Every structure is written in structure tokens, then in C-alpha cells.
Length: 87
Image 1 (tube, rainbow, N blue to C red):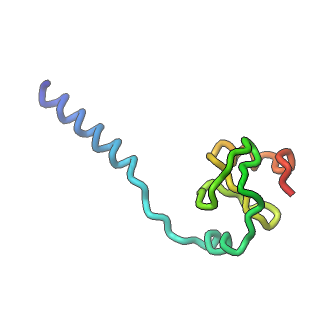
Image 2 (tube, rainbow, N blue to C red):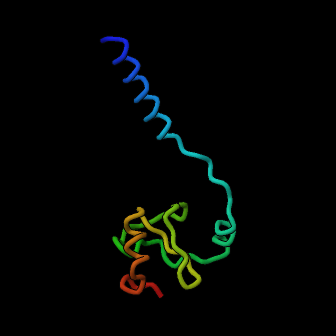
């Protein structure tokens, strides 16, 4: 392997490693208010999977918190919450 290829592979590996590191979350005003809102359900209304209350994919709707298993389900819910039975 020549030196250019070695440095290229090393650079890509470092770049991928840097992308995998998570940044620490800082509390926000919405996070503080989330603690006072009740959870509507522990089921993702879009795909009906069980969700944990530590999920970051949440939506505040009509004074309740709805959790989702992934960003895709969250987006579908946001497009039409009443379609998924949100009250």
C-alpha cells in the first residue's frame, strides 16, 4: 500500500469515528416542560411498537407527549395526528 492510500484510509476512518460520537445534550426549555406533560401512551401510534420514555423522537400534541420508535414514524404522525388516533 502506498503512503497516499494509507493516509486516505486513515482519514476516512477518523472521519467515520468522529461522526459516530454523540454530542452531549443540553437541557432546553422544551425538555423542562416535557417533564410536566403526561405521556399519552407507551405505544408508537404509527407502527404500534412499544416505546421507552427515554426516546428522543417525541411530539407534544394537545398537551401530551407522544413517543416514536424512529424519526420516520414521528414525521408521519406530524403530517396527520388524527389519522393515528391522537386526541
